[in-house]
Image (cartoon, rainbow, N blue to C red):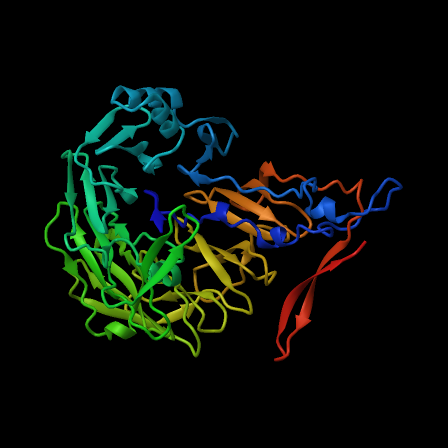
Length: 515
């Protein structure tokens, strides 16, 4: 969860990766509603659908975009980054690629490497500070993309990964050799923050089972404090986890890969949550002694507002309950805010949203559907904000005045998300739909909520990206997938129908009907 200096909270969803599943599943003869038959219309053949000369189905991978501020967004292209003004639609290069490449060549990068890097191949990027980082051998370079100044740190360890600038832009933290490091551009030094890494012990980088089963295939297991003074990180000790060996027979010379892999019932990694100052020094380990190490999963952690401490989630191995715990900066004082428990599996709710009155917003499936709840500062009261036989899939935005919330939910379709606005002024209120068109909407709101980037698709239309105003009105179409040649070929119909299940419940099914 990120916060701008005016108090708008927004979650940068990886919407460009969320290409509409329904659209991709339906690249079949019956993608669109049948049109009036024309004499020239031809039937679809196997070759037209699946062969080498198959028809362009109109699919389009959404472009990577991110908001730079309340009105401008960045878009990555093959030739560099574009900066677009939402109000005017004006596009311009975010920075001069040729000048940045020249600045990199001036400090020793080869021309081809400098050009490739300047076009966007950075180790890390901090758009709000116009800062970018690149590795050049054992040198780490920080480039100010507008002023073209270059700062250099030598003696950087090999193969840095999971790199990220501090919010201030003055440091860059990364993982190397399973250890956590920080490059300080103010002091011009690179220091190691952890010293106990090995092949079986990782700091700041998830082991395989946490990567695959807990962190949604994300290796990064460390986070900057909002004030840039410290880092919270996870340590994974796989010493007792059995090794699983895989033969790589695709290589010219066969190799054997070994990975710590706990099968069902086998020993899980021992995990710890630590805090360390960017200046170095002793690590503060959060006390998790009240939990059985082999029946304990640390499924999430984040910083509290003001960098005052951590919020983290503890679960049992079968994940039938989840504790939300607040810990101070010293890692000693703990307070369990709530225990979420159901008769089935409890999902990770993601980052909570902290409100100014000390309460927080968090998602829970305790009702049988995933909804937003408001938890009082002392944990004594948990009040529903949304309710009903539908789900809240994401919470992309909180208004500046904290009186309303943007949610991505399935209220009007069990298989497609739309954007809604809900009130936070008291109890459950009826959500107001912001995106009116049927189909899937993956929406990225600008800080402040005045503008919305919406990647949208449905059974009847290919993916389309539009810019909307805060009330949902379409301002302009940014990109649109190509439609199929319905005047030349006969297409069937696609229908979404209710489908009764054996247990009496009902689900939805897609019927593809011939012309």
